[in-house]
Image (cartoon, rainbow, N blue to C red; front, side, top):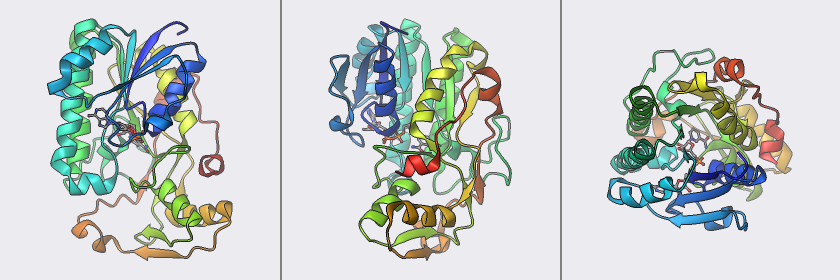
Length: 311
Ligand code: NAD
């Protein structure tokens, strides 16, 4: 990759800003496109290889997006609204953003035949199954309240698959499960960052439901490594690829682990699901990925610990 110019949309956000650092380490230059709606300019390293294009990606800015993509060798599309609260409160805006930015990016990659890695979400598995989820599992798309986010991500996957299978442009369709680590914002309501912020500010840690639900958390640096590893596997192009951790933990145990690592005496409280989001909260008792596909096609493996991500 040395000497390549790579576009990272959403590069001023959580996962993007770690990916940007990795790409710089490899000797790439990076063109970040981000409107700073969720990301921050300070998340980007002060490095001559980084250019920030402050731009809201959408069909109305497609020409500007295309101009940036034309000068690049490949594209990572991470820009997206995120967070359950936002997906509930502003569902049409969330859908509009995911679809409109997806169309602009896919169109630009088609026009210039640039390889694309795009980020979907494990949310498309909906309520899920009580075992590790495989890419081939029928996606049990729940209709509320995250239907907007999940169904828009599904449409994004379809757009990417079409670009790959109909037009022969390599596209890797990533389904990240929960990711945690440095520069994750607590305001999005994502659980590790929210628990850490609450513990550090001596506020209660709010566990949704009874805390027995299983999740797994991938260190953000492992996530960035996975995003880079897939592009060496042509066999993975055009199909959804889970990335995540295989090590489950209950949300109750996560709350206790955070208190322990932070050294906080914050109380743990519980909010019943029925009291959240008008009772429309999609409750998955388990959401753990099967990562056999990526492990079979690349030498990527998760290496870093949850403790490290929390720290
Ligand atoms: P983030 O909010 O930290 O980063 C997303 C970035 O996109 C932000 O910097 C925001 O300003 C930018 N953005 C949003 N809409 C934009 C637009 N229309 N034009 C330009 N910039 C725009 O989120 P993240 O956690 O880094 O997530 C990155 C990607 O991974 C997203 O696609 C997200 O859906 C996906 N994902 C994340 C997780 C997770 O656990 N963090 C899990 C599953 C999927």
